[in-house]
Image 1 (spheres, rainbow, N blue to C red):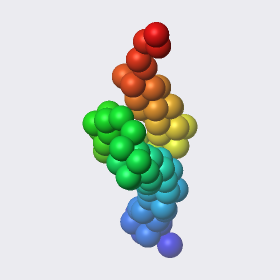
Image 2 (cartoon, one colour):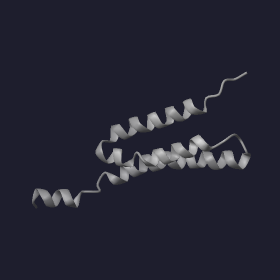
Image 3 (cartoon, rainbow, N blue to C red):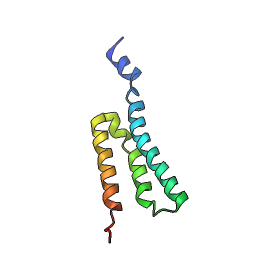
Image 4 (tube, helix red, strand yellow):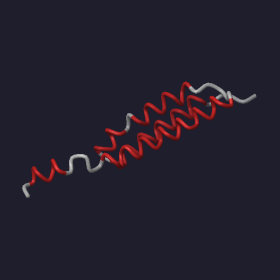
Length: 88
């Protein structure tokens, strides 16, 4: 088998891992959004944006898995910082 055939044959090899990581984080946030919506606890605006951003990390994961993990850490860090409210 020639090198080009191997590349084409395994073009989506890393897709499942990248999709599982980004999709799992987005699914986690979607569950939190639904839970908070049902109990009427606070706004979900930042969590919706973070869920979309988590899905947007899938192409990064196709390039390099550790970069996707770092990007997801950044997404969740920004989410926590955006939702941080001063306590009285």
